[in-house]
Length: 269
Image (cartoon, rainbow, N blue to C red; front, side, top):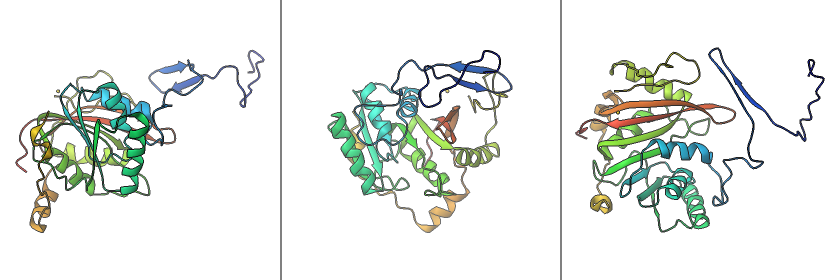
């Protein structure tokens, strides 16, 4: 403004410019559309930002015929984005909250996807699915003052590991606190390697690198006895899950991490 004599109209600007600066590089961009890219006409009630949900589904490498599960689906944004882009897949969304599932059902009807996604009201730590029955798990792990998961993040990951088949993929959206908690556990049990030249770069980091289901309708009880809880608490939260990629993303007022894992061998749970 001092150099060119320009004036800024913050209420009705002619052009909006986005600038991201850090010690390594700068990114400058301008919006191509007036309507935000994350706006979706087919989503009645917004939950997770749609662009983040689409990025997570894209990272999961979904193939036709796969069994894709979101065990903490909330309002179903991840499943909606995935089903729109990759329709020939069996999708299941689970959540412990009936109000969230009602919101998901409204979104499914608004998007015309009620016959594409099956919903279950169950706890993420007691999924009624056979071991090694799921191809892909994609989920936004809740965080913030309302959701204080603490050590439960380990048990959540262990139950996801149980239902995922060998070679399967997990893509999670983790808060900075959850990511730090899991990273601390990982560093004590898994060697830390990297294939990316920008791993020392602040802000965006790549974390570890090495890379129709007939049983889906069966109900298998996964309730654990107290002795099994003690055993699980001693286990690494990763177990047979090998971290593959990790990307830092902005959620507006806070940052988070999209992390991808592969199951390398049978967990034995």
